[in-house]
Amino acid sequence: MTPRILLAALCASLVLAPSAVQAQASGSSSTAAPAAFANPRRLAELSAAFPEIDRMMREFAERSRVPGIAYGIVVDGRLAHMGTAGFRELSSRSPVDTSTVFRIASMTKSFTAVAILQLRDAGLLSLDDPAERYVPELATLPYPTRDAPRITIRHLLSHSAGFPEDNPWGDQQLAATDDEMSAMMRGGIPFSTAPGTSYEYSNFGFAILGRIVANVSGMPYPRYITERVLLPLGMTSTVLEASAVPPDRLAHGYRLRDGEWIEEPPLPDGAFGPMGGMLTSISDLGRWAGFMLDAWPARDEAEAGPLRRASVREMQQIARYNGASAVRDTAVATMVLSAGGYGYGLGIRQTCLFRTVVSHSGGLPGFGSLMRWLPEHGVGIVAMGNLTYTGWGGVTERALAILSRTGALAPRVPQPAPVLVQRQEQVSRLVARWDNALADSIAAMNLYLDEPRERRRVAIEALVRDAGGECRPDGPIVAENALRGTWRMRCRDADLGISITLAPTEPARVQFLEVKRLARDERVVPTPVCR
Image (cartoon, rainbow, N blue to C red; front, side, top):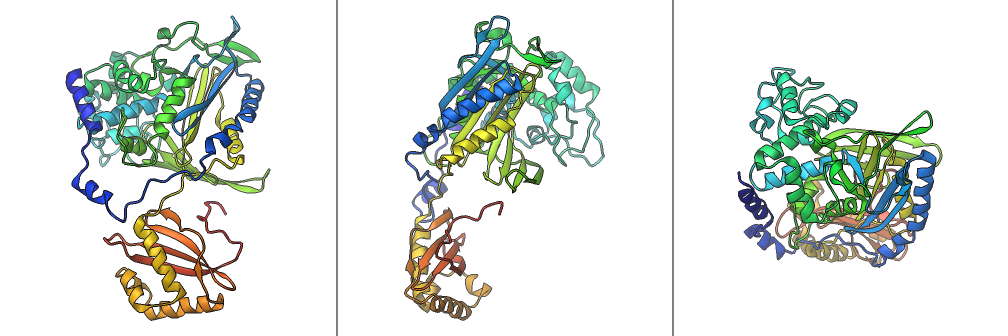
């Protein structure tokens, strides 16, 4: 495929005419507006936390003896704040600034994943295609069992190809040539597990994905990434070869040994670059995190590219589960949850505080970096340091905690579909004063099968009577999504909590109805994950 034909295919993948179904849905009473932030002053209130985060970052760098750092806070798709400290080069005492370029190692994987999904969206490959279709060297690979499936592109994207974890080894393969990588594949790759059965982090797998990008596009991987991903996003400081960075902007990498800094030689780019070869500045990395955050929420507005928003969201969904932990933090006497897996070039976790945390770290001799964002909150943090495997995990978690204390780090609020608001009004009338005709008009076909109408009437009337009667809605519905929500009804002596879920029919009728007593001070909010 020529670059011109490829470009036409990629552009076509972004210009998608609405289908008849989409057009019909846009006028449906079951279609809700996108989730939205309730606080119009959220950026100003979040900004109040930036000085405290700056102090914490400087203290972290001094305590951890990181020669130089750069970090940024992304809000609503834009880099809202940047900070730097220390030196990009110790011998000259040259300070880090916002244009300093650091190596970001394995964070490169998300760029490779974007390239693969671009090619998928253009119809040039399928994620379920066998990888050997595009990388012939894999065709003779001995598999661990007779019933093992052939390795697919999806396996490689989600670290489930079965290759062994290879972080220490992979770091030293960046300089390998294409011929040397081909020889490695022809020589065989051992399996630690059968393909498609478990998670095992594989740098080799992402190097193979880079080979797929090159073979399918007909362009060398660095050129493809630059022309089709980086430049469309305005990431002009991002490269795959340290020699391409102006010397007065390049961060030198260091290792601590016996209390002394030792400069690490720069690793050249090669066939393994797609798994960890990229270098970037904090401003460019902020653009990347902003691009990922801007895919949320799903909405109707025009696509800006270079990848469809739906595909960017797909990257940030768990494709391979990789475990959970729940431990008690004795310092604050609370449970700490971490559960999740790997998407495409990105890790996804759930914690007690945040339903979705998307992140990836990067570590190579001389460097350590991290990008972490909260899709539902529209906020992210990016950070880079020039010390081997700079440990950013704890300090970025504390930065999110500082932002949370402002009260402005809140998720978008789901908006109810018009039909859900209509059903709220009808169910409220039904609870206040039962009417069989009204009940029949809003009930889905299963509602009386699950609990007969007469039993429902008796139970609800008893709750209303015990609450003193005179019940009326108090406040808007709290939507969990477009077709499910909860609200309060205030009665004379007590309150009632009403929850409904609508059925997948047009018109959407009530398939689930719960009425229960609420304490006066009990809030109508989603149930917390950890409680």
